[in-house]
Length: 328
Image 1 (spheres, rainbow, N blue to C red):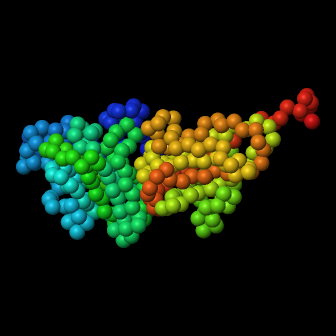
Image 2: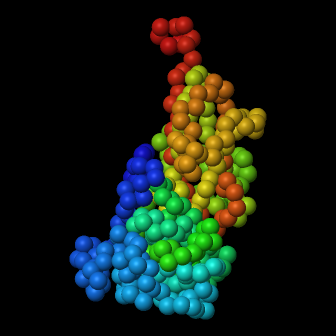
């Protein structure tokens, strides 16, 4: 089963304006924001709230302008859902802190943009559960852009600390940023989810995969998820595709294939390009029959229930040629 990919991503590397997530702001809302700016400046053109002057006293083109100091959790401003916040990283070590709440069970998307409208800021985004600081995630870039986006599963009524910094620790009156948090649709689909309670942390302890399966999982710190699959006699082509980072997950994953003797057949950390953090094993041909295993883990630090992924699995077998026209 091919997953329905609901989050539209950029098709052009290096072109941040090609990527425009549906973040709950319609045209009339944008027009209202523009009309509320006395200078008539369009925030999408960047260059500062004052039309490129860098004058921070000019009216900011957003619903929630930053109010300094807002560097810490105790100083965080409230960011209502669907409302844009904006400001500048204007001094060394500047941290922009906000809190937001999930109105329902579902998926929360937080998007921090700067390069998308010409800012010099290289934005890095952090998200943390206000009730459990072990449930957190970070992101420093997204497909086609150095801006940052996170889309993660959340529970109704949960509160979240959102913090924004410049990844390079630089600052200026052109380090402008805009930020929004919105409830979203699931970015991918799947057939079934991992069962951590049943155990899938050992090489042969996972659930069996079959051709066309799509499975959902999450990766806590130091976690690893296993599945197994049976390869019949003959020539077999394997297809494994992770969907995570390209769809807003903080997970930077790796995929490892194990032969029946538990030796490694293949390990991948990237997709179609070196900049694609979702691993792809495309039509890997194997001839050894038996029970094989597949592992997904993080390619680096991090991990929490927010680090989600799906694996799309395919297996195509050509039986051995016995020389018998009848197939016997």
